[in-house]
Image (tube, rainbow, N blue to C red; front, side, top):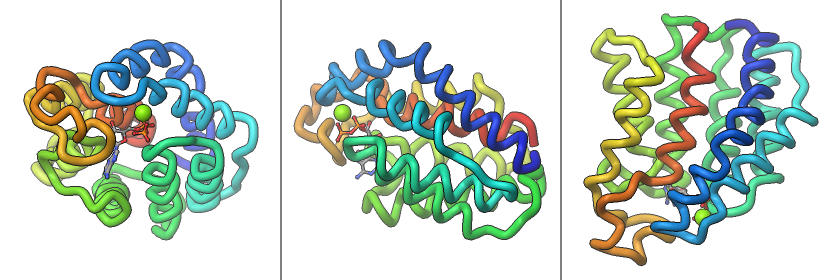
Length: 191
Ligand code: ADP
Ligand code: MG
């Protein structure tokens, strides 16, 4: 995936988040404050309007800066910082050979910024499973990514607003895990 394709994919996420806004809002209403759909839509509308770049790194950096400044909530800095970190990798294209490096950089950035580890019912769980899956030589499909988000249902939240719900958070998909499905799909489907 070259810079132009990546730019188009990231801009296209504004349509995905338009379609999924209600779904993400419902998920965040159950175990949060109900703003995740609005946050992601605002962020990727801004990406659609503002992001530019002639190289993969420039596109990722511009996306990260845009997300940081436009998404409210905990998820904005987590997504924004991670895209800026991925921009630090110096490849002309995202390919099946370096995709794992991008996903691992994304994962490590969320871990560092969110002080989070696996099993805490966050977006990080999808990144961790995606990384393991790729490490095992398997490819990421939308179904596989969706399953990783579904897997957060059984977990009890210990990070972010959902942690206030304690055991009541069990039985619900984490909203950030669900939004991560769409973001990882955009990054990985055309490599
Ligand atoms: P807020 O929680 O501030 O309302 P959002 O609703 O936009 O922000 O985002 C909530 C999502 O952010 C959660 O579903 C979770 O996946 C993610 N999240 C929150 N805190 C953390 C954290 N410390 N580490 C990783 N992810 C987190
Ligand atoms: Mg929220």
